[in-house]
Amino acid sequence: MHAAADRLLIATGNPGKWRELRALLDGLPFEIASLAQYALAPPEETGATFLENALLKARHARAATGLAVIADDSGLEVDALGGEPGVRSARYAGPGASDAENNAKLIAALAGVPPERRGARYRCVLVYLPADRVAAPLIAEGVWEGRIVDAPAGAAGFGYDPHFLVPELGCTAAQLDPAHKNRISHRGIALRALRERLERLAQRAGAPR
Image (tube, rainbow, N blue to C red; front, side, top):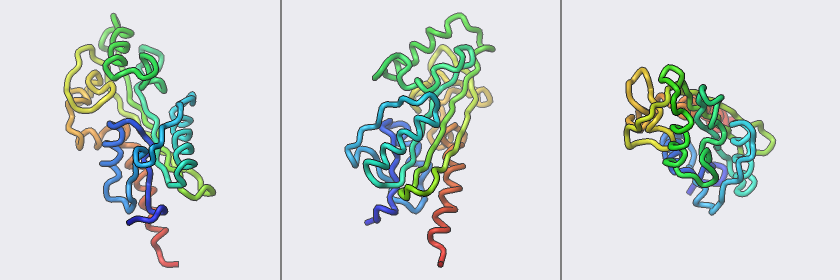
């Protein structure tokens, strides 16, 4: 059994995010816990930025469990839509909207917009809050550039992945296998940066005093 001090809570209720974050955290000296283990519902995302929402989710989870927490907020920014859906990506078509509903609204909003003006990016902000409330949070960000296409392709991934074309690969995010996606995605970029810092913290904690 791991002590609570060795437990790290991934504060997301999104199954797709959970799978990606769990895989990216593999090998760290923590027991990885989920919100479901604590019957903890995520808070309402009222922040105006990805960072505000990530901090809100992390603080909510730490207050309820006393554990160290990783939380993310991420979404899609489409240039032709002024950066929308942005922080509202998960609820673009309304509270509780499905991926299909959000994608349908996105494609309708881009009707008539030519391919060269459909630039977009996924953005992820990750926050690590230690169980120790005195220590400062660790923050990392990742960006993944792409373009939105009308016709969905691929059955992997989640969210807007079937419509998010990765130009250099000539396929959508939903056509990538999970390991490949984790190497190049916004979440993978952010978590690799955060992971390096977590590994240094773990090494310092284990060093003789």
